[in-house]
Figure 1 (cartoon, rainbow, N blue to C red):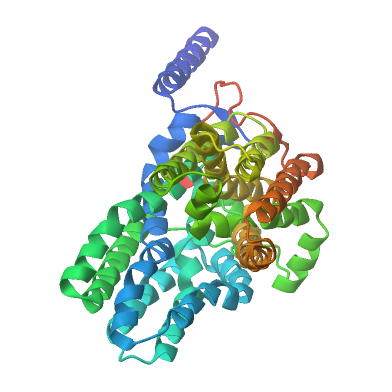
Figure 2 (figure 1 turned 180 degrees about the vertical axis):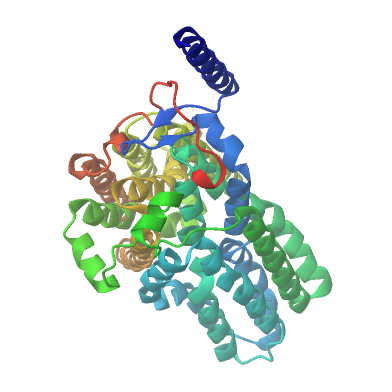
Length: 469
């Protein structure tokens, strides 16, 4: 009997060993988290959660981000038909500021009801706003009212909501997942901008808005189907532990905010995002003017500015890979600090094309890396039950920085008639922002794996799949 039992035990052990070896060979096993939970390996996470990654990517691309790329296409047609002044139409830029105070409530709402429910609100309302645009009769107050409604729900179909899916489902490959998820939006913008431009030119702006309603509605619906069921963070602690979600604290939003403000990591992340986004006005509308002021002729300046998009893409993917292999705060100091060199190069008297081109590439690096780094550090420094709430304040810092930078640029140009002063200020604040992100590595203690390579040595661990993750 004992011999048979021993043989049976050895047989079971051999079977388990063979099963684990097969999974290791296919890249499905991998690592344990700091809490002892056993998760998929780096590539195993992509294999298990590719549909959530694709869904989040489509949601970001066909949500508020698409409107960001398309708004300027409708401007000339609306001004021509209704006789609006350019100055009045330019006020569209203050809409993010007008809704900045609402964003934390959107984040809290997302944490409480889950990604799918929160995003569904935006997926329904956003197409309706485009239909409303197509029915305008010429009152510019109607235009701003609709824009305000869009801004109110915009973050529910943006990175605030959809990146939560990625940080919940991906651990070892979280950096690359965030990179891929955020890359779909500029790609969709690059593809759809000429298409929508032709639609507006051929069929009119009303048809253009109707096409936008179709794109955002269909894209959002597909995204929600791919994401599937999500678990609200407001579930009880016992339920949360059983399905891998993260429970809310049970405190009010004000109480949670008071706790967050006392945490150095929170203040450093907000300050870092504020400082790093101060030069946003340059990359949004002034880059060609800056390059031409440095001595480049118009044709060369256009070519040099085109390198900016290359820098964004390189920065995003390089950052995604690095975040999964290197301590996050070290990635931040490099990825977000190097653009300061670019700003100083643009302010310098040197006008060689390779210097100007290299400077623009470095500036693009920060724009590609900041979103990934911000989302990653939020997910590693705070419980995921508060992810969207914390990320909301990071987003507010971005909006505030962009508005502040616009005012400072306007004043410095009025005083000096040159971009050099603003470029120097931007370089200094960029360094301060990168240092703020770097210092999160000294303050963080709750989740030490953020300061280590995300992939630990593989071992014979149990693999959780499906709803267990």
